[in-house]
Length: 85
Image (cartoon, rainbow, N blue to C red; front, side, top):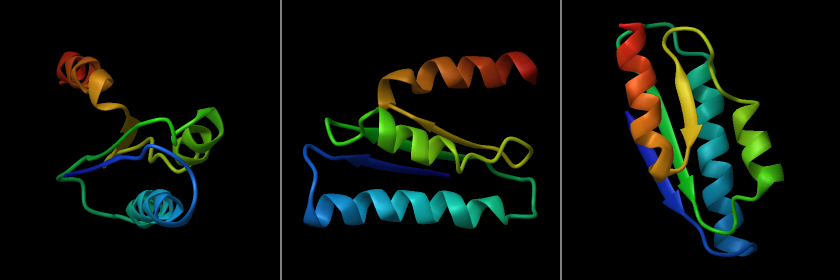
């Protein structure tokens, strides 16, 4: 499962997009079935170090896992997952 946002600058609707991704990750933390990983792909100037840190704090580190990444780093994550399988 994946969600993707590209957000250029802060304010209004952009903050709503960030909150949507944070809520999705928070809900996924409570997930109990193990069949599917969650990828939250965020790109654009809006996702600075502070915002990325906030999203990373919501990552689920045990199965079913969740990930926060840019679309450009998705391939590297998929390779790491394949190595572990």
